[in-house]
Image (cartoon, rainbow, N blue to C red; front, side, top):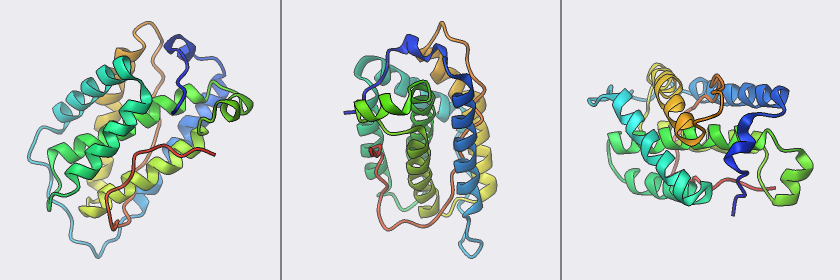
Length: 202
């Protein structure tokens, strides 16, 4: 089980560590875009409203997080990946899985950045860097499976940062000041199977 501090704890002690976490997530995001293989045939642009899809995914995830906690949210994301990766094409539902993984990782990394390394070890929680690294592998595999281009990934990230993250954060922490989400970057090595969304522990 992943221990999640009370929501009020996110009110953001340790600002320097939070900045370091966001930088690590930004590097992870850049890594996902940078791992594109040009020989692959690119996926088509989404035929749905990507911004609305991301907002809906953020709203559903926030409701689950509030009522059932982060562990349940990651179990849901893992099942989402496994189910929707069976499709032969990149779908709206699969894109929602990726958006939710990205959002949940952002929030947990932000929360855990407020805890000391000793506290993380004591509770068995993953470090923010471990969260960023494991997310990069999952999201990179997800984009790689459907040969999503770096340009499409960059647009997706921009839409999540601008439309999904503010909605998700404010739903969870209505009284907290929202940080600027300078976060992840997805990459794309082609996977053999659906990625697992279960966070790794030390």
